[in-house]
Length: 186
Image 1: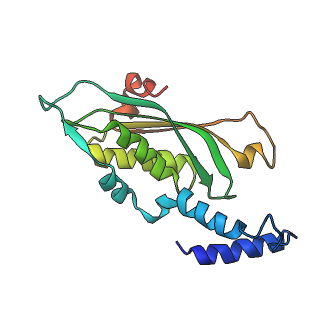
Image 2: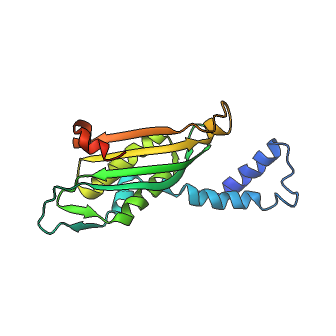
């Protein structure tokens, strides 16, 4: 990430908006925005495969099999819509998978969701990215992801419908055909 270039362009954006980037309240804004972008867009520098490698700490199931399903709900993330660079916020991610001899460390599920969200995203692709990473990390093709979130491109501009929520589901493997499994995401 080229922070100096970000600073330069944020300064130009402030000027284009009719602001004075040299006034007291804005002098440090280009640097602050560049630092913020480095943090909130950290996931851009990693592929799904690299994220699976980074957060793929698993634990063997003692008997080697499991008839249970792992479900983690209400993981909070935020992201930025790639169409308007608008905040996607108040997002809740539910992730479920059927273990295949090993389970993923629980904190790793939340870390995967967080890192995948730290990109310019579409909510639909975010669900798909999370499912792909969880599948690779766990070795299970049976993965479901449900995301519910608000989009400032809907709530703060355009239609300004502040109560709208977008819900997406990504279903893979058994989650596509087994309604009992997919209901676990709700």
